Image (cartoon, rainbow, N blue to C red; front, side, top):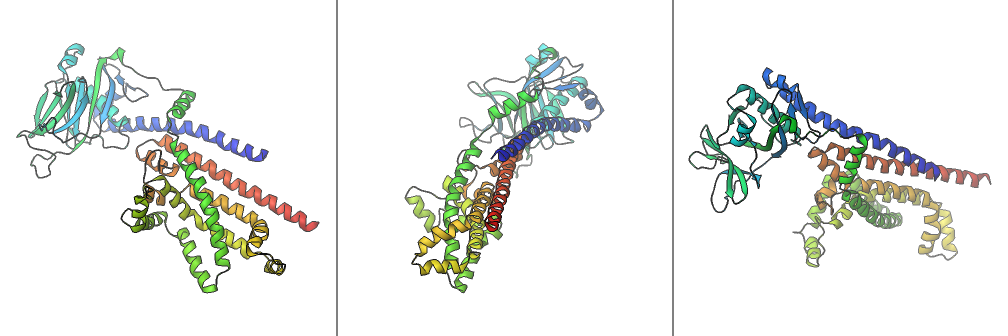
Length: 467
């Protein structure tokens, strides 16, 4: 046990620095990507970015030689095309309960930047000045890139428009900024000059929007630049904000599934052992096929069998126990995928038993049940324990079938493997790496346990033979 504890401690100690590195690497990669985007924007922009300081929270920035700075940057990846209070204003981005000093809307062809007249007057910003326009462009490109998180950014080659008026017409499309369409609620709107819907592909002024951004403008010495946190602060903040529900869902699912896997695997192994050769071959194929099928295929087949439109699914739903897209579905998926490991190992262990010994027990009047629990299980326990641990590890890492049958619901069906993909997809590489390390530690412990158990069993058998 002391050796196991040392191995686990070593794995955790290796995981912590890796997590810190991943978090730092993620931030550095985001900033380097922003700088790379700036390099293609022209010599004037590149010169401005050389003195740019980006806050570690990606919400503020300053540029050397620029009298103003950007604070409280927010980015909206999508707006709404619905009517507001029964009146259609076009495609709208909700700003908030107060207007912003700096706002922009990016399409696949244009970037329209609005600076409020008050901010322009107070900070001396002239939107018709090439220098100020270049500073604004640098700020927007870097901050937008740093906050993309996998969504669409500013398209290279876009035409930039800088205004201080609340409206502008660009190629038949009317952009409106800082509009209080509801009491205390401000919007940016985009609509055809004729009042038409520019998101309609049949519209001659059809426009594709990528995102919008909002920020405050302040004097350069008042920018809220947050220094990069230390590694200890980074780790503290990481664990304080981490959603631990995938761990609890995974453990609850796996521990429940292993009970079914253990019982069903032993029962299936015992059943095939006593079946006729033809029936044994058929049952063996059925019980083993989940091992060779892709997990997504298993999940799809389970969905076809247990879905809400099937008799089985409808019956369970009628008694208030729906099978699909619920926590029980995660248990079913894990059980089906990991079951063959338990079954195959248990059957192999039973087949290696001395049949003469079992027959001798029968001649002594032992029942089949007594033979199973008093002879077969104890003599096969080493292989069965290893099979149980392997099945546990397989159920722990199940992804494809679970996603198909149970879905991705936070705190209910989102297991660690699903979380890894989800966080990677939204750009949270640090969280994805953490959960990957957790799975690696679990796998390390499982393999270590099997190896130590095998060594212990080998020494025990060797000692019994020598005696």
